[in-house]
Image (tube, rainbow, N blue to C red; front, side, top):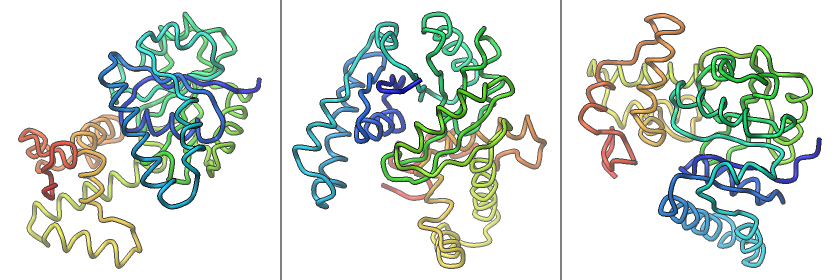
Amino acid sequence: MEIKKICVIGAGIMGHGIAQLAATHGYDVNLVDVNEEILNKAKTAIEKNLERFFVAKNKITAEEANGILNRINLNTNRDEAVKDVQMVIEAIFEDMTLKQNLFSELDSICYKNVILASNTSSLSITDMASKSNNQERIVGIHFFNPAPVMKLIELIKGKNTSEEVLETSKKFSESLNKTVVTVNNAPGFVTTRLIYVLCNEAVKLKMEGIASTEDIDVACKLAFNFPMGPLELSDLVGNDIYLHIGEYLGEALGEKYNPSSLLKEMVDNNLLGRKSKKGFYNY
């Protein structure tokens, strides 16, 4: 099956980034969210990203940017938006019940040859598909933030994901000029499991007074050649997201993955990072 048009459900940072990426590479995209205000904010963000990071840097022309925008259709009606596509990618909140219910609903309304993909960064694809009848078409396609820039896609095979769906999803991912790694289903996969451990350990170092926020980040950047430190990264991703991931990994893999008590305290006090303007740093 050739993929020509996709639907992205969820117009947050990851959702509109995936939509922009796919449209940049010639795909028509139906971008879906619950109301027009969210969708208009997403469209504005895409316009700004294209201008700032691509047009202003002479990577694309203004005409090409307009062409990308014109390939993205905004829609509040999910059931209508999935009718004429070959792939649906969900980018909603990292909650297992929400995602299970969404896939079950999509499974009942989408044609059987439509691939259903999750952009989850940590949740089990097998569990996510468990309430759906056609589990062989459910796969994980984990993009990284910002999706138009980051070079990696983590492709996750659930227990019942078919080889055909996996291969088609890999070809689609590579068509976006990404490097694809394929992993078997497991909590946190490869990348989230590793980066969560680093970030959580950095939070513990901060809590124990071993070093300041800035020095922990500088040490990691200069010692390991990281583009940003783990506490900066936690603020970027969202401290609430890392807390949620840690709780999930702790339950699935054992208490050594449990999130730091400082991380819990920060989330309780709305110190979420960039999204709340305060976290380990002020923004």
